[in-house]
Image 1 (cartoon, rainbow, N blue to C red):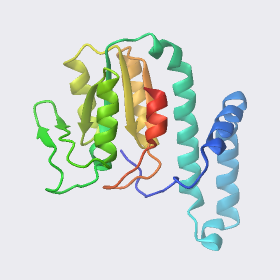
Image 2: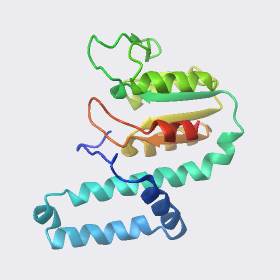
Image 3: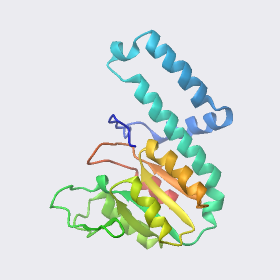
Length: 204
């Protein structure tokens, strides 16, 4: 299940998240501080006072830190794999209507990128993945991934999605013994979602 709220973290410097992950992994601070911050936010009605949904923001931060910790734990094992798949969210396409020429194959199920827009994030990510030898799937949802994995013989997986979808996906790939790396969305929604191309490049 994706989040039931929208967010855009693209304005937050990456250095903030790197430091947060480093400290959190050492002391599990994101869990302990998250619970305390939620209590304080509710007690002092911070959401009402600031207009910000503090509860949702804390959820996002906790999930993003969890994803980075899981990435770090599996990075060495993932680096030894050869046959890899990259799963991209179809909602990051530039166009979500007929302007997008991607063809959907229900038997996979995945979109096949037609590279119709040079500035489309999915188009650029598909090219990057294929250049690095990945099988690339542009999927309409996380529920499609287990079926694709069962039909294939991948050794490693890279997935792009919101944090709330990535954590259960990690559990699924762990059960089937597939080392996984994840790239969280920095802007969610039903369309025009955004992930960092630079982070994806470094992950692949």
